[in-house]
Structures are given as structure tokens and as C-alpha cells.
Image 1 (cartoon, helix red, strand yellow):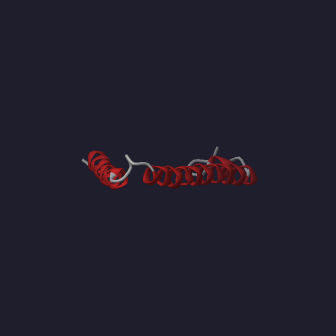
Image 2 (cartoon, rainbow, N blue to C red):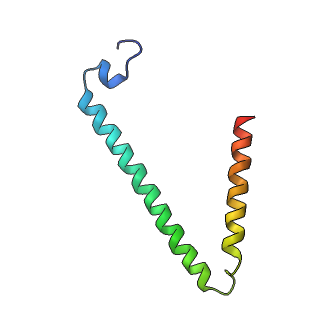
Length: 76
């Protein structure tokens, strides 16, 4: 393998590399899409229930705070 080149190019299998990259990209896109659909569906169900009146607002704050704390933890 030639140094400083991606493996697919070094092995002259560019098509194989493109297929792998496309597969990973499509898989990631489908996972993120399904997570968002589940999020919207769950939020609608919470808003319909009597317990979910303020839960969605609190969950947003907790989620944002958690994200900031993780980001700070990773950078320090």
C-alpha cells in the first residue's frame, strides 16, 4: 500500500471505496431520519397526555444542558 493514500485508492479499488462510503452515508441518514420521526411521534404523545404538559420544555432544557456539559468535558 502506498503511504499517505486511502486504502481504496492505493489498492486501485476506487469503486469499492465509493460503494462503502455510500453505504455508510445511507445507513447514517436512515438512522438519523428514524430517530427524528420517533422524536416527533413521542413529543406528540407526550403533549396529548396529562403528564406531558411541561415535560417537553424541561426535556429540551435538560438535553441542551447535557450537550453543553459533554462538549465542555470533551474540550477540557
